[in-house]
Image (cartoon, rainbow, N blue to C red; front, side, top):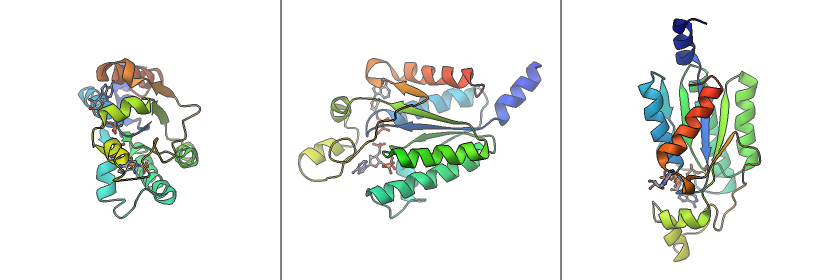
Length: 188
Ligand SMILES: Nc1ncnc2c1ncn2[C@@H]1O[C@H](COP(=O)(O)OS(=O)(=O)O)[C@@H](OP(=O)(O)O)[C@H]1O
Ligand SMILES: Nc1ncnc2c1ncn2[C@@H]1O[C@H](COP(=O)(O)OP(=O)(O)O)[C@@H](O)[C@H]1O
């Protein structure tokens, strides 16, 4: 393959990279770090941020099992559309249920669109200290309930493409490990 072909290939091969994990695990931070790096290399990148999606595409949905499933399927649908058109789609969304994640994986497989599942496996005690949005404190104070990983389920991914231990490394190291996996798969 010539250098020109290689560059063209890089720019047209889309993929969905789904970062699943507990609130405050580091999904969003790692996604934006990687997005910056991929953009610098000339890739087309979109970050489908859970909070933004819930304001528009999933407005009105809550945090019941059914609503979370619907939310994840909608995001999976949009991600696949973008990825099949050459975009690297980074999805920092909790996606707590294995069956929801598997449905998204299957949608990508049936369309032949690359899909990478990353478990940002930060332990709940670390997440609850980070507590970026104050949700763990609110749950502890009895102001909210149904918080993923505390009093709501999180199905640990059994066979993710990558597991990131964000509590043992820097954001840059986490993003670099993920970037290395994408390179290995011909996606970066
Ligand atoms: N009860 C409860 N449980 C989990 N998360 C909660 C909850 N209430 C609000 N939030 C905030 O909403 C963000 C989760 O939205 P997601 O769309 O990623 O979740 S899901 O996949 O539909 O379960 C999530 O964002 P992140 O912290 O970035 O993960 C939370 O900040
Ligand atoms: N290695 C790391 N990877 C990701 N985030 C980290 C790391 N180390 C510390 N953090 C911090 O943890 C917090 C994670 O927040 P965020 O990315 O919003 O989590 P999530 O999107 O999973 O809810 C941020 O304040 C970030 O700076």
